[in-house]
Image (cartoon, rainbow, N blue to C red):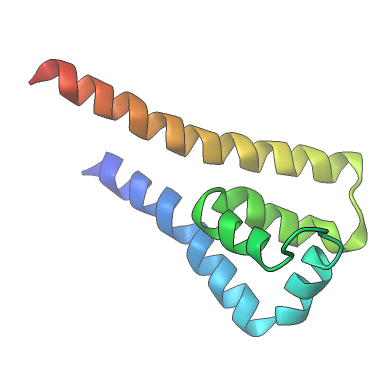
Length: 99
């Protein structure tokens, strides 16, 4: 039961936060992704579905420019996203062996 709750938080929380942040402050998203050269509206959508923690962290730190501390925050968010993806694959493989 606890594992399922952790999985739901990892999956849902950053997406909900991104959605409400975009609704309340769309200018911050426009400012964050304005310099993207190829399909600027596509990157936040891809981030929403594929790397939500990293996208949330990027929207948080990017408008003021990136410092070393900001890169550390982005790296931690990326590790959390990759851990969520990798952890799901590991659990799937364990389930496949036990049945």
